[in-house]
Image (cartoon, rainbow, N blue to C red; front, side, top):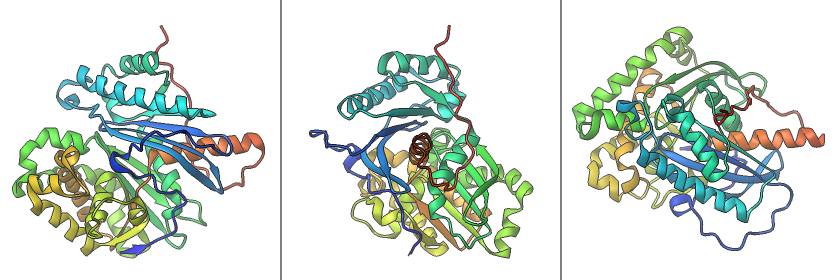
Length: 368
């Protein structure tokens, strides 16, 4: 395992990622908040401008399973919506204690797919005050690239970034040129840890069921491979794989033999192919009870770890790069960076660093 470029974001990990609310500390300069409501998780990050990035002053993450049952019904269930509302109310309470200059709230695959997604977001606005926008899969890829760009090598030719989510897996094919990563291809696969867990159930814990999941995902990767010939590019050298998701960080935690998950130990390291394969095999061998007891997994995530590993296995078999860069960062960090950059532009203090394209248009779902 090899550390790559130093990460500019400080540690935000804590038990359940919900630190106790003590008296709010004095925050130098304006604070900004980013909320990401996904298929499985509700996450918030609050930060202030610091150097070329930001300093985290508060973070929140809770499993809400918003996409539970969506694969079979096409709708968000009442229980799932209630869980998400409760988590968002907790976020709103934190922002009352720590006022911010600006909030940006985004929803992803579950709200994109659900027939009642817009109706749910209208309810969210009424009950929490948060004005969510549903972003496209391309915007997801661009935000992930925004946050992960500092981890990409300046001497490479190409990079494949993948984000294994709850309801989808995002792929971003990136040209590395003069320190300015450029998104040249993207795709969103309609498979994530929640959709695979619901589709395969307990069969995913069985060796044959696991391999069937891998095969299913590999078939979905073929179209992206035919367009971009990534396997050929990997054979030519100069291509890096970068994974950003709970699956990838869990594999890194297992490879490092951590007694508890610690973001600074994981974010930015490189796993070679053997280390990643050994960590995956170790998780598969643990079984359900072993995964529940594992400090990097636990009861809340036991249903989703092996489906995520199946997606990881499919990607690394289709595109067998010698190393995978591990990123514990994603949409929230990308959102914060863009909020802060816009603030600096208004203040006339933006330094001209990489600026990925992004469609930031608002969508009003509560308009009659």
